[in-house]
Length: 120
Image 1 (cartoon, rainbow, N blue to C red):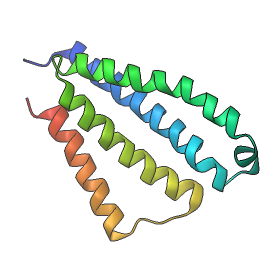
Image 2 (tube, helix red, strand yellow):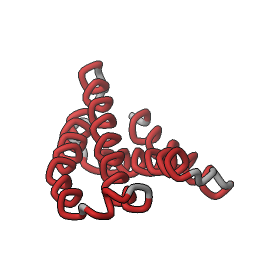
Image 3 (cartoon, one colour):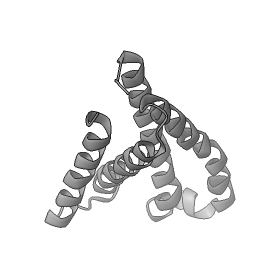
């Protein structure tokens, strides 16, 4: 179908919710390597997964609505956002730089997102 402003807003909301979900999941899984509190409170951290699930549910809902009801674009957009968020957070919090392999992977992820959002 033809994209309109409402569809574009839905895609943006979906991307935002996916980014929040991926950032939260990154902290949930990798915080144990950065902060002792995360390492010592696994049950609390695991319980946060309940809340994180809503970000993925909303990301999927808005992205599917923004792509004329199609499921595949939502999956690829969510995946691509996850790669970008992971790369930024591992660099920021753990100081792991961007190797050529990581940079190429991020570029491929950005292309994947762009194909799903811009190819009508």
